[in-house]
Amino acid sequence: MTVLVLVAAVLTLLLGGAGAASAHAGLSGSDPADGSVLKTEPQHVTLTFTESVSFSDDSLRVLSPANERVNPRPAQHADGKENTARVELSGKLPQGTYTVAWRVVSADGHPISGAFVFSIGRPSETAAVVTTGSPDDTAVGRLYGVLRHVAYSGLALLVGAATFVLVCWPTAGATRPVRRLLTVGWVALTASTVALLLLRGPYETAGSVTSAFDLTQLGRAVTTRSGGALMARLVLLAVAAVLLRRWARRFDRADDGAQPPELGARVRQVGALLAVALAVTWAFAEHAAAGIQVVLAMPVAVLHLLAMGVWLGGLITLLLLLRRRGPAGQGIPASAIARFSRLAFRAVAVLVGTGVYQSWRQVGSWEALSTTSYGRTLVVKVAVVVLVLWVASYSRRWTARLVHEASPARKAVRVRAAERARVAQTVGAPTAPAGQDRDTAADAPAGDGPSEKAAPPASEADTYRRGLRRMVTVEAVLGVVVLVITTMLTGTQPSRAADEKAAAASAEDSGVKVLTVPFDMGTAHHQGTVQITLAPGRVGENTVEAVVFTGDGGLASVPELRLTLTQEELGIGPLDAKLKNQKGYWAAYDLRLPMPGEWTLNITIRTTDIDQVTVRETVRITPVTR
Image (cartoon, rainbow, N blue to C red; front, side, top):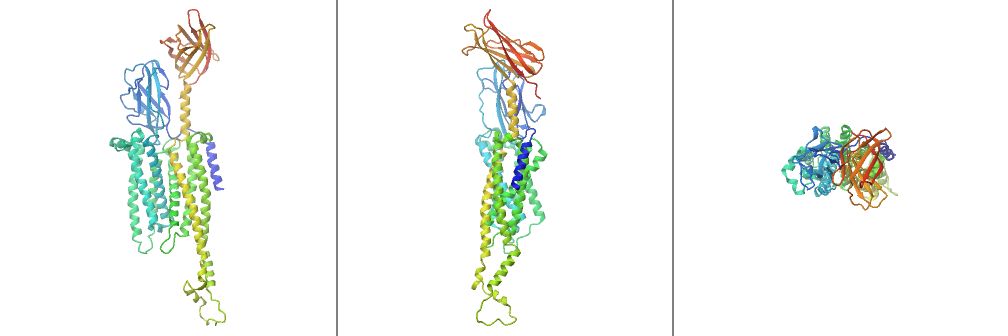
């Protein structure tokens, strides 16, 4: 029932979700626009993104048709707006097609890149070639992704093992497996954080692995949001190392058979604050730091990370302790297992609850679950989590049986059964003297007579431990799978951002209207097509280009080409586009359209002094978007 309620909550929020986009910025517009043809050279190029972005000196490049860079200075934010990037261009620019290549870092720490073109005067036959592809599809990007997996794993081990010692069984702090687990978690998290900090510069700028030791790049990386979070994490890990060493010494002093020291409320508070601070270094520089409801998303992300560490790291700690036996054959007590079972249940509840919110925030619709990479990965994660909850129910059953077996009432039953089993059965022997305690037989050596048959209860407890160990193993393996998927999600563009980026791209693409209209004058060699390009295809000033093609697809030179536009519904027009011959094509750069809606184009093509034809086509002009 719990699983069904949680899944229903996830689906309800996903169905009802709506709103603006979130993390992983996307390009929402540019000036000049993609594919536009300008009459005069622009003074600068401006890019606008859906979220705030940061960039390096080489983040924005404008390349001429000859593949030469024409922006002498690095990019800056336009008018102080954090979601813009602007570069100034050289004074004299020749006619032709220019390519704008960009690579910036979104607020959640992930690089995004792209390219578009614009033309001055007229499009040229040549244009700069820019390599396209995923920003993470590089050697540095792949290595950076692996190190992020290692960092998450280290956090889980460190937080989970420490929580088990502080909350469930303080004696575990004196055991070798738990100490090794704490050491492995700290080393993995520290080493991966150092490597991530070194690779941060090349990761943002698409540099090589060898440039990781470039001090200039490293200095710049430290000043960014992500670099600052990594530096703060290293400081916290240094504090954690000092505290872990101090607590280890306290346990070492108790190794001579003395009872391990009690870990008071102050120690638990310090451990909790340190764990929260470590989790904040992730939330501060990833998806929670950008998009909608950042104030709420940050603490939710912290809780999600901590719950993951308590549950998964605690599972691995429990598994190691279940496989361990002390010198006297004693393992982890059932009471400690019961405490962790209750703690793990609460951690999983927090995981699911915070996961519901994060799913709604990053996905936002049913359709995105199947149409985006983030949505499909999230579906797989939800399926694995449901499987984990099913396996965990069996673990709780084995725990309940083990706790019941170790309860005082159950122990009393076993003692009474053992006492009855030790009463001597005599035939013809004298009765014990009055006043002699019949229980003196209980002082006989453990190996004498039928008392050996009191062992079944102990073997029953061992059976419960073996069953619990198997279930915990399966649960831990599935937990590792969930951790891997979670790390993949943190590096994947959220569905909301992908939807907005697609919408922005669609709006940008739909702005340029390209119409191909056939014409036929009824005589040989006087037929073909005329291609009309209207950009941006919105209310206001537009650029019109017209090219005439012969019937076999070749370019045709005509002595006259006229274009008028009429808004018949509102009675506007005809408006003469005043096309001028540009030696190969016809163009106008100042056609103003006052109203949106469906406009009728009347195109007159004259091929000779006496042969001409007028053809009609319609085009929808869109309103200006803000």
